[in-house]
Image (cartoon, rainbow, N blue to C red):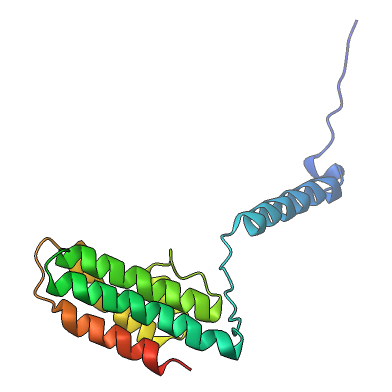
Length: 152
């Protein structure tokens, strides 16, 4: 018994299902990439009530005066003083604007359009993390105090 098989030509089948499957696969991949893309945190400024501004300023100026006393009495190292100063200015900005800058990196702060905050935090970075620093803590305290006093 003789069996014959007739093979169809390659293009005798429709390409439409193959193109459809490829198209759907590409769409699914693009959706997965889009959903997994890291999102930038959009920080927004919330203005405090006018009477609170004076209270907040006085609170942080008191903290700075306490830090100055610790430094002049040699009760704190320069590194710890810079860390405390960084916490003070970051918490002050948080209370004044509502921006959670306590855990922001210097790069994150650079995007906030607050040059005074960026300048202060960048000044604190070297003494905070270096083994030996030639920075003057009293000058840094006075700059920070000036920013808090001039804040509108």
